[in-house]
Length: 487
Image (cartoon, rainbow, N blue to C red; front, side):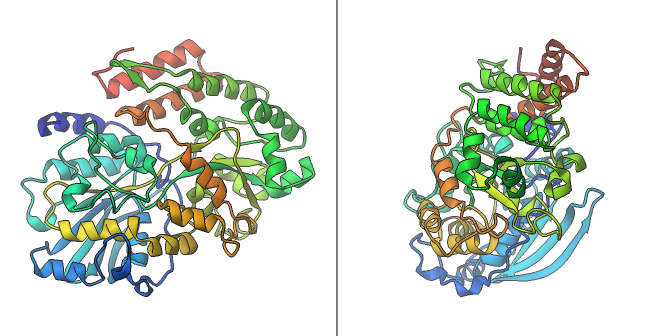
């Protein structure tokens, strides 16, 4: 895709809001748990072909740029880098908290002689993408120390940047297929362009499960054993029947219809757009119809994700049975560090739920025009390929990492358990889910379609409009953002 074409796309997409998963601007910072001493890892002995801790210092002397500019929407990647990259030293923090409780501003550190500068802009109201788009559009004329070097993307809008000249192929950084052979394929599919070129890497995988309230399970079902709970939610028919059982006992099976959306939307058989026309897959309508029935029965509500009403179930008094999400949700976005919460007291359990799914994730992309190629290569290799660092992240940060051998070994490791999950080791469950992920239906339009469909259908579920009007509102909203589409 030519840059002038991308310029139009970027300008159009500046209008698009973001309902993100992992790293949503309204979530709790997902990297805050990292406390490892990165210096204890011998990066020079990894199988990934990565360089040792002095590589970046040597690269700077050999012509690497003086400043490594990293664009992101929160501190998750920053914490992974600062806590686990060999030789990183922390510097100044020039951030402030916005009205939504999210950090914005800059944080600086050092890798050898290179100043690392994190440019943090929260995602709310599409601010992060707008800021990144402006920077990328000015990349060619920017001074060397002001150029974007690394930027982070999420699955819903990754293709916007991947299908452009503004992101570099990882092979052009010197990263080989052998280096990344142990990564989960779906994580590479997300950032592979329309020509089959890989344009980014991630340190994490985000397969989802159903987190359930153990005390509620014991009270209502007589057991909080994951197998027993799974029988109650093994498919959508069982899930919907169990919703009534829980309601009669004073619990909502989930807070909102929005809770189950990703599980349905990840199991569609067709993409959002077919031959330029907006397409509503049958499984998306299953979500609408199932959710509408539950809402009308009074079993669940219609609150938006990340709202105060949606979050009430993080605490016992909220009387919410379950949430759907990956490891980052229960560990970093459900008040697990707040005294009195269910997570703080190890009160959640994990089971597969009705269907496998994934939600969110963060991908590292190198910006075309960077003058820090060697440093970016090493960061990608260390944080996404080094098995020692991968294991470090699992243990210290409770993250699910993008390394199949590491995760399969950890799944069988009896010494590993999750405090939030009451001592349960859920990794085998995650591993089973991630192997079945199919991203063949991803498209450039996913962000707008997912956001606007949920917005329109929640309006219908609330009884504000009929179904036909909700569909029409959805179509019009998407076409406003993407005038090239029809319906």
